Length: 254
Image 1 (cartoon, rainbow, N blue to C red):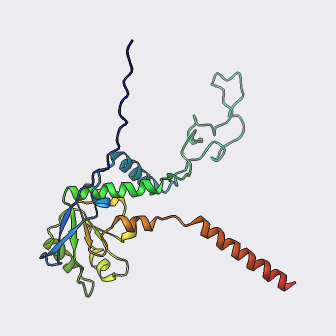
Image 2: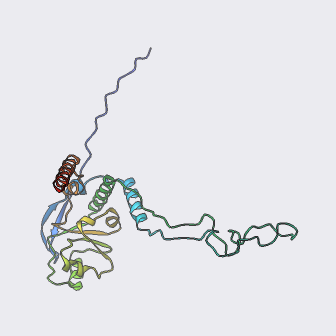
Image 3: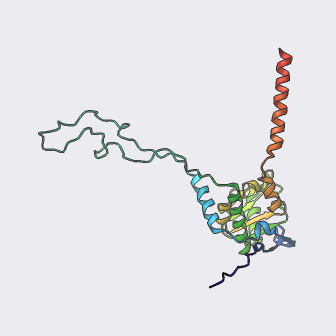
């Protein structure tokens, strides 16, 4: 009789996080120091399946969905039979608005619809972290200490990218209130600007380089805080207080 052997329970190993150190440069391209990228945002193993699903949903949401064809009930034409049922030698028809007629309605044609897909927030965050980790692994993450544009000048923006040795499609992450930065880069055809809150997996993946400043570098703490759900207990208490105040005002009015 064979005695079954008891296998040791598998021990879950902690996911490996890679630490990337990036050189911080000035607008002129000079080295001013180094910075360690957050391993939670730049050091994970990219999840290709989640990346594909999130990017597909993002591209689908861009579709306007305004395509429309007319059915047999919407096209112009006679409602009666084109000819009598029997005796003509031709095929029988009930209306010249049917799909087989020239100028007739379209059967099963596209109608206006929404292509938006519901994507969980955790998947969106994981896709962004995977995209950033892929760019960090390929050494495509560039960090600038700060932009020094006093006035909007596209020529200075081009010189800064050249000094940073950035080619191809570039994603620049800048704060919204830095209008001189936005106006300097917005005329460059291969440069795409986003704010830190608009950073997404698709824009990171289609870019050859991602340029951050020290202030716009994403971290795992800020990512969790930005998507932290509200406390339901606190909301319930607040609703009870509002309801009590409303009841007291109604009683005073009476």
